[in-house]
Image (cartoon, rainbow, N blue to C red; front, side):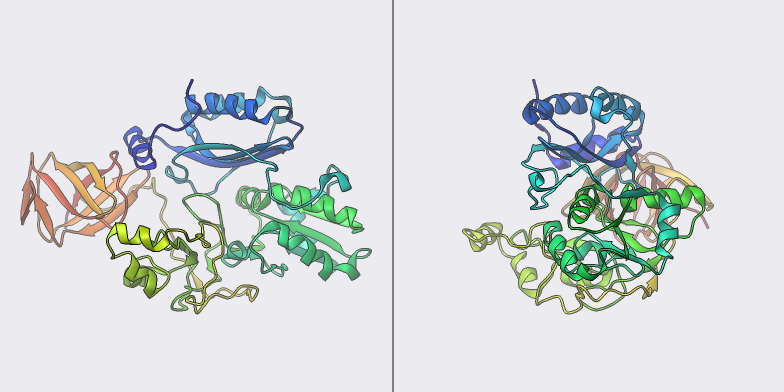
Length: 452
């Protein structure tokens, strides 16, 4: 009986690419009394592993909190595994507005003391006495009320790239830090103000709204389903987005765009940018915002010290971090003296730039092209793609198109190519062609030559 992962992330990514099928990124949570979290965890693993469902899930005596990636063709079967439990019948699945087949590459289900680390003693207040849930239209309306105070219950690195206009955005690293800070700030508004709160998917506000009602706040409201559900509703109903920028998410995407506004800066050069990355130095792994130019110049590192470190022999890198606690783990910190343009707590509702429109990855590009071959392999560390040439021929300097259901439509120019292992200028049918590709390719990708 398999109750753990047997494949590495790279092996799983290759299988996903080979399948070439659409996967849906989603999240959900439920507070409920679970008598045996360990058995609950094992039962879920068996059911979801059989459906090729991947993700990061926490279960506890108080319920479940899940962020997942599920094959679209298995979504109804996945729902059935949830419906098997009374407390998850009819549960809302927050489906992402942007999908990535590689959002999660493992199925990780952990038993925790709590499904969200809130630092609260649940025995001291009624956790079921929650704030009023608001849908997108109602949320927009209450934001227009001058009697409303809106609070972002996410961390600084989340709110920095996107937030609701006019929101209080605490400069905190954890949810538990924000509760006493907001309680202290709003002491004088308990009786007469609307306290409106939001987070990514709604789970943090479930507990926060009950906590603030216990603290004496009379008019407490929360965004139903969080920013994820809000984004879907405004698109479906044609509503104005009061949210500006990107919604930070806790998977390999690191964010999904809600509006085209860029409200943050590259932490290294100050250029308008809202793309998060993790420092390439495994001894650091700092989460920060980095533009493409700095990514290339700094080799995905947050500082010159880290850049120098990644060029040391691997054994020396291990020695340098031996015995040291890694303080900048993924999704943590986002602060360092090396980051000159980090502005926690100084957030603006004014866009610094507009993001380039991204084309629908399934939209066919209207260019003249001819099929040449297909993808065989992608060498992750070297950023090299291997293709088999099946038809026609390719020459040095040709403009090419790599196209696939996940990769989308990406154009490149063949500036340097290797044919059957040797540097060359022409590849014909039957040849193995390799060249640098600045993005991950999949086995479902096709190689085209763009015709003049």
